[in-house]
Length: 285
Picture 1: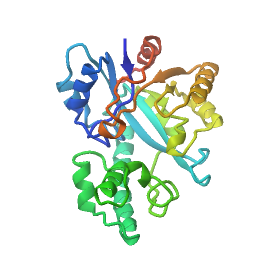
Picture 2 (picture 1 turned 180 degrees about the horizontal axis):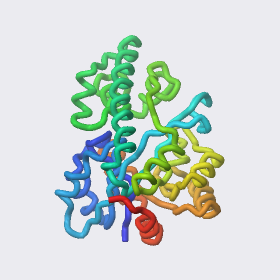
Picture 3 (picture 1 turned 90 degrees about the vertical axis):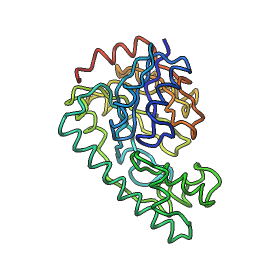
Picture 4 (picture 1 turned 120 degrees about the vertical axis):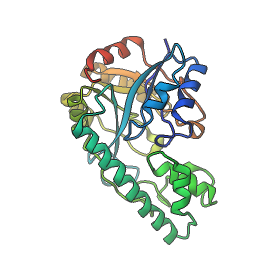
């Protein structure tokens, strides 16, 4: 079986609709797909309605977290930690309220970022960002695409630097995010399980250190995303060993965002044994 436990749609910062994501997954030979949009479950219904025969959909989310123990690209301050939550009850009031707060603050942050960009001479408008985001949760990738469209940078990756909207950059704006330990607890209270996403995504400019991973494991973390396109061979080997030592499941996934990531659904996968163990650990709806 080909099991991909991390993907995004236009409900957050992917370029394809939830319906298109599940159709592409089936076309790519994926058997099980988790839809894990940033801080929202709004794409689930469309994905379920369009689900092709033979494809299993895992309902998930990627929660925005921040912890001071993470080394940022600039080596200073707290940095993002991304937590994948699976098979939780979306009606849980505490988790739903936190997601609402995160999404609201994303909008405030994006507005402030656009204002800073304009002060720096970048001709990006808020209307442009909203058009690119559509009905999705507004995030920095939408701003980066607007910057490309406006000719400020050549590629979206160039936007995520100290010159522009990268962590610590001239136009970077902080936002509200959950402490990752609390995120693990909230998802567990809602009946779900958590996996730490791309803990060694060095290309994105941060590394989640082993001490924090051990702390998260003690708090109830279920797994580590080991096989990820942004992880090199050495980091995969280290994370796999760490997962084994801490009793965590090792997962693999594409983290597909559609066009920006090259439509790569199924390029990395999770073993059936790890997937079955994750499902057995969840008790949400």
